[in-house]
Amino acid sequence: MSKKEYLELVDRAFEKIPEGFHETDRWKIPIVRLEYEGKNTIIVNFKDIVDSIKRDEKHLIKYILQEVGTAGNIKGNKAILKGKQKLRTLNRLVNNYCETYVICETCGKPDTIILKEGRSHLLVCQACGTRHPVKL
Ligand SMILES: [Zn+2]
Image (cartoon, rainbow, N blue to C red; front, side, top):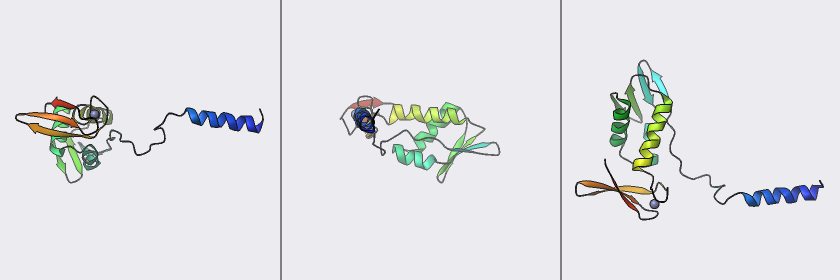
């Protein structure tokens, strides 16, 4: 293969990369960072997660504690859970939480807010306008 042919091949390969591939600021579900302190598990970046998903920190911690079946509380930027919790479990829970309370079912974007309507809550997508009832 000549150098010219090779360069053409490279050009063509780049053309095939789907649009959006180069987006580096695309939102991703935050990843939990843990530290263990004695018999407790500390979510070191709890505040970052809350900031990223723009939901109520009390609701998120309540959800996690309920699912793990342990006690715990928020301390500054961190969340402290009783017992040794697995990183994989906590990441799965944050994922589930985002799928239920953050990500729009219709367009898959995280640009949502939760609105209270009477006794119920709605997950309203600001990207596509879909409204889904959610149970808080
Ligand atoms: Zn949407």
